[in-house]
Length: 335
Image 1: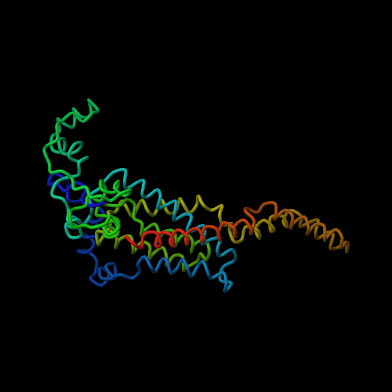
Image 2: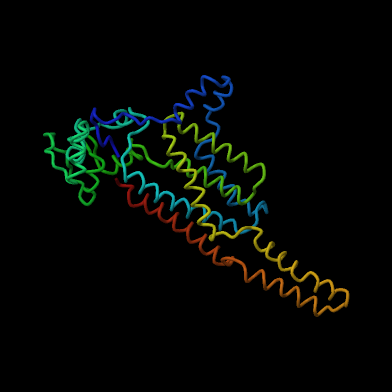
């Protein structure tokens, strides 16, 4: 969304204790440590590459199948996270941590958005007006006179005018939307951090060990860089971390734990250990075979979704995603 407010009464950016903490640490920490914190060690495409390595490492027996199952779970969780993110950042418009963003990227109208003119500007600097607004619960003040909004003929896409706020030289809606690329208001929570957290969660579940600790350290490094470089506020990164963790836990039914079946067999074997040893001492092969069959049947009854179900869901998710991307390119290639 372009500069929605564009008024001097609106705060340029929000106070952020995380930014202040990082600036204070720059004064206290050794210069080498500060330079390491500033360094671009890892970025978004690196996390996506780690995920691709993880998804296809099943081909080399690095993790147990299903590899496409964890890939589908990753993409499905990402889709839910992106949907929740969109609902969150359109609910309340927050100013960008980079106040120069809109003027540097767009030809912004010199007057605020019509909704801002009516519902925000008359009450922005008057505490009594806000009090009356709360009491009456209706916009009672007359807005000031502003220039009319420029409204080009975009056909069926004309509903985008109120969001993109074009000017005479902006051209088609597609070119303007492509240039907008997320706009300049703060998008809570951070999409980059959501990708990083989901990659770390998938890696931790598949591998664990010291490599997972390294991935989480990289996630922490990415979070402080997002705040340090003012791509996001601290709250955006904090929320992305716990939302990513919770979403990954909630979608666990899409990929059963790699050792769930083995643990089930061990529990069953412990229960029949005495009977199995007695049957072996008695050289009763039929009894041994029957007991082992009970172990196998017991582990199967406790399994989650079948391998076939997981594979079908994984393939369906990937095919749907690729189809959506191809259709998007095909239907919008003419602008």
